[in-house]
Length: 420
Image (cartoon, rainbow, N blue to C red):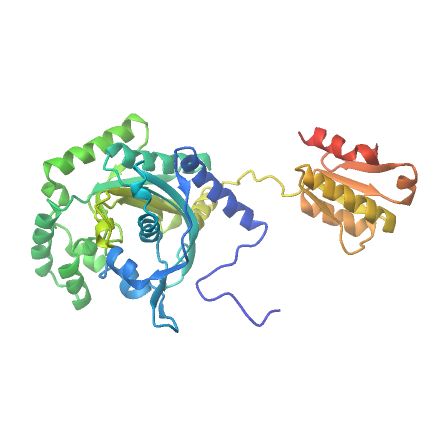
């Protein structure tokens, strides 16, 4: 056994479970690829200030959970705790917004890092697939992203998830609500950290999960009552578009999400089968984030869906994904001449686009056939000296058990036909 283990709060992805994660990533990204979103990849670490400005200095992510460090050159960097700020930074740095085709539509996939108390569904290293539409203010864009996430989840067979929807207002109406909420919070019996948070970003207090805090929030001013006419009309259009497409949602006026950059539309995907860590993904509109990190005004909207959380949701619903075997053909040579001939045929099959594997290590027939079974291959090629003397190999159908002699020179064509 190795002396080393994975760090606390992290996990390793290994076969066969890793195939499930890859299938989930593919299912989430497929609707995005079909809707004009191009792939973007950013570094695993960024300047600390990018997240402090964008995510918010009062958020738990920045104050408690971010892995920050100083390089030998004196730079202050942080492992990325979320994807939006990094993707927007990359788009601005590359001047994608100046190409004249707005919105810039991007999707990404990767690992993110937060120093949290490890528990099921909450890790210090986690995987997400995200999407961002940068540079356009349009209710149809907000609706599109929610619809694409809904489509992705349904393509996986998930049914027991809910979409929570809210509007956080904009720079015109939110300050008025902010002041009213602060006045309310100052009259409550809150600890010093929470009172400090209320002064910096009072909406974050609404997101506090502690029962003793939630109990006091009964009767708090409702943001919905403070929305300006423009925000009300915008939000109603988002709701109408979702309803027209048959996407069910629940209005949740307490939904604020954990990041400071959200404006107007905000939403969350939750799955009740996951216990306290019920959120599987979420997002919203962030019209002021570009300016926060030094860019021009670029109204934008996006989301991130947790791959690990989605896998847990599949398990909660008892859904088994139909994942094809990674190997279609497995070659079992008996003898040195057979090793040379079958290795060449395996290489030829791979070049022809057929997933093929080989029995390495000089195993006997019994051990090699066990490996063939474990590989999940549909067909096994077996050859010994007598077969090769006759110019054939034995082709076994692992599903039916049928076995036939096939000419060595024809085996690739025969297998391609059978697997078509």
